[in-house]
Image (cartoon, rainbow, N blue to C red; front, side):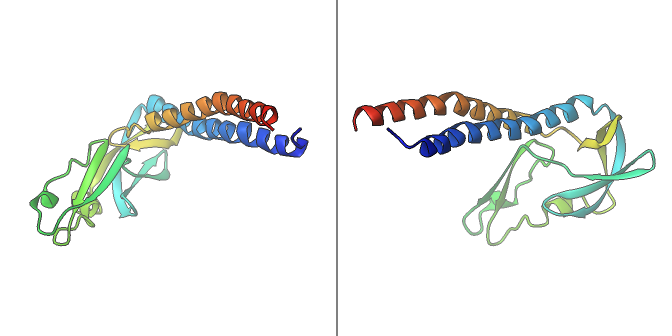
Amino acid sequence: MPDIRILLVIAVAVIGFPLFVVLFFGHFYRREVRIKTLSSKSVEGVVVGYKRAQIVEYIVDGQTYHNSLKYYWVMRATLPWKTNQAASDIDLMAQRITIYTNSTVSKGNLFQDAFPLGSTMTVWYNPACPKESYVERYSGLDKSYKREMWIGIWMLILLPILAVVAIIMGMKYK
């Protein structure tokens, strides 16, 4: 007979981790759906800086907020030396982008070139909570969070079954 403490640790791991995944990604999924559906007003924002992308500052009712143009998927690809494809234009308004670089062409200043400091971008915001917003177009991140949440739900269903089967098999063939 397995020690009760071992079974308790297994139970916490088998139920706790998937439950954490469901709750964690469920929170972000609900937040993204709320931003997507309730952001009905727009205002012009100004590019004020850069981190991984441009930082857009916008003002609603005298309060200043910050956001950036987000992407569902960003892929960076390094190509062989002197390949012309690296110099090709990228549609920075797409939800998914691939940034090609090589030793002669760098896209390190990609956002600075496309969205220089002081340029304007449209920010869509939730009138009830202006901090909830997106820049130019919605990124589609709700799809990613929903997928991760469903993975957690399936783990919550399957892992306890697999744990019980493993424990029964271990007791039977001991």
